[in-house]
Image (cartoon, rainbow, N blue to C red; front, side):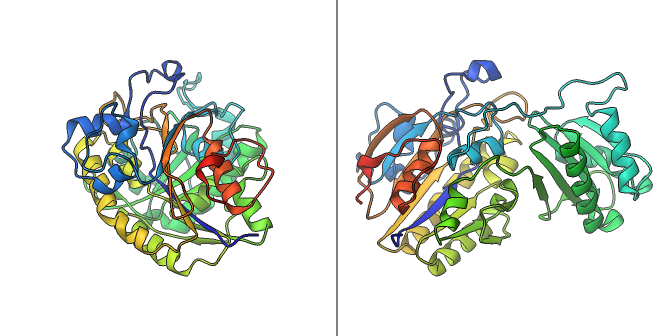
Length: 400
């Protein structure tokens, strides 16, 4: 195995234009990055040099017009526009089945199956009932139902357009470990029922009254594992290390992960990414998810906040580059879109950016890739790994 290292910077939700099938998702015309770029005068010179703006503008007129990275776009093959599907497909495991969604109310007026609710209450044994909040924004839901949760100690359950079951409980009055415990129980019940629910998410919050409740950094996702080995598993099987920063480990159900590091907030995520790059062994892969682009700005439809976050990331990018060794490859990509100018608060079905750079990378346009898995295939070839089941490597941009 060669000694090359790879750093994946997942800019969660930074879509770069509607995919060909976006009309099926009512997302035709969405373009997360373009709508931010056109609406707010951002200063992102480092990302510009890597080709990000070239992906959305036909006539780019910078002081240095030609990017110093390989840059392209990728289209999603998976059936959804969710976090898990995007991440799995990038590392060679597209989701070719349909997730279970909770989009229609049953005869009892709930989006969740009656059998599940009854088993959940019976097996948890730490509450009498649930506060069924249905569909909605988590920040709004905890302030709408937080008082009744504090009074009854019954967990708040809700969902979104993704395949998720979310449980919100007060860290102090319900307890963090109790929340994790009932989340694991919910995960097991869904699995035993044969329901393909992507994630059960623990959503702890603090505060003492409606209007003051805020979510904490102790979120935890209980995901289903990928159906077959991904690039992450293959790196480990070949003697390498996979370092997860942020929510990556949870997304892969902690499979194919050598070291999982908690971090939240762009400064913390970037700081820990830089620290780990400095200490990464040879033959290793570091995977950071910058979740705040999505959860703090995309879902909140905060265009200015998203723009400011991109500027901050761009400002810190030279620090990341400075920590690299001559044999490293950096990959910038996304998992879906979340257009802050779009209706509602859901993800948007979009193409994603695919940027790679390092001393072993030839700059140039990689075109439109037919699957996110081309990203994983390119990384695999760079690291000397074979037999990913999906994806085609951008071989001509690699100096092997």
